[in-house]
Length: 196
Image (cartoon, rainbow, N blue to C red; front, top):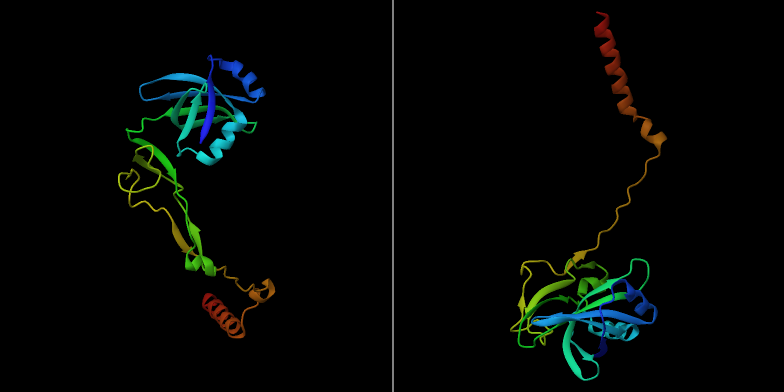
């Protein structure tokens, strides 16, 4: 995936003008790299980001003559308007390992879920790994940094709701025949003891 960018002067608050023009301010930084302010086409970035996310390498073409391998590190958004207002790119060295969050995608469907007897519970939606930038799947050479005993996905049985029979209030207040007679006899016995 390619994304074109051009260098820009740091603008501060004037970057709003860029956004109104359909541009997007960004910065490129990395290990042994001087931070470089950039300008992108906003729609082009959004199309590339949908495919790359934060885990796939993007070829960032600077002024049409230099290409750098980068990862999208951070996207700033406006609290009221949709879409990005600033992007941070991290330039990677293909020979050095990096740490990155990789999303967990569940593939297939278990028998209990297909039959309607269970639901999927996924407490972890991403895992943190250390790998070379070109390794995108967990395999030999990729170190998972999260706790190996951490629960990633689980099938839980569906809970059935129990409907309790409602007893009308009038029936609940009337004592059964045997209970009423015993209760009255006990009350009479207590009254007789107090009179003596």
